[in-house]
Amino acid sequence: MRSHRFLSVSLLTSCFALLFAASSAKAQCGRNTLGYGDVGIVANNPFHADVVVTPSGSAELRSPLLQRPLSVARDTQGRVRIERVGGEFQHDNGPETGSKVREHTITICDPVAETLTRINTVNATATIIHSRPSAPSSAGLRSIAPRSFCSSRLPSARAAAHPQVEDLGTQIIEGVEAHGERITLPMLGAPAGEESPNGENTSELWCSDSLSALVLRITGNTKTGTKTTLAMQKIERTEPDPALFQIPPDYAVTESVAEPRERRTPNPAPNEQP
Image (tube, rainbow, N blue to C red; front, side, top):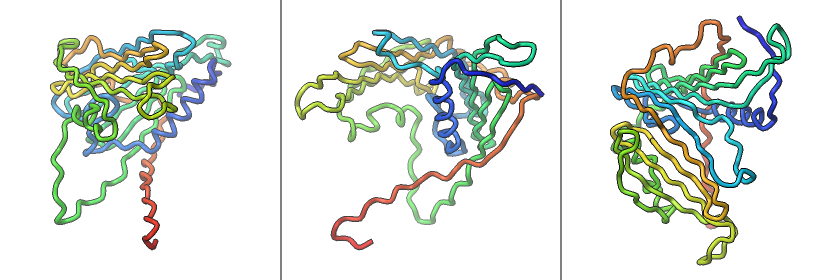
């Protein structure tokens, strides 16, 4: 068993890691999960690809791209693996004292085992989060027609809340056909009917129904000119290496059960009794 203590060279990276861990504790990955990240949970549609993040615009206005995606894979069983790269850490003891290592975080959504596994390569640990059992369907309730991954991810699915949605048509991206939509949202503080002094935030999404995945995401701000592009590249529609979905044998493993999701109770109307 490897045991090293590391000193983060970035306080922001450490804070982000804590937030990511907190959100992961509530994550569910079960048989009814539609998608994980930008990838649909579907069987018999394997692929693997690199993920390239490209920022542009003023360097001072860019948000730090911590835990940026590096690669993604889905096997025939429908398991989805996303690998992210974070900040640099430095060994502070042992024979490797002073050397630096780049943090890699791997998350694996397994709809068959109904688990979400998070692997950290820096401290050689893995956490397996088991989904909570789903409540049985009530008799007599009308079944809901299944939705495709893209229909749930594209902005038009939320058009009632965000009316500024533009259909961008279809195009071939990295060898797969994708449908694109752009949503535009004014920054807070703009008077009704007037242009926002802080510009508008735009989000452009391109989703492939055949791949069941978002292959391109472009976000930006019209005033600052900053833009971030997150794109799948080198898409290979073949079975990924099975070893990618395994925890290394010398890693320390802990297990837990996902926390129940909080349900918000609507406030009663003024004329209603609690």
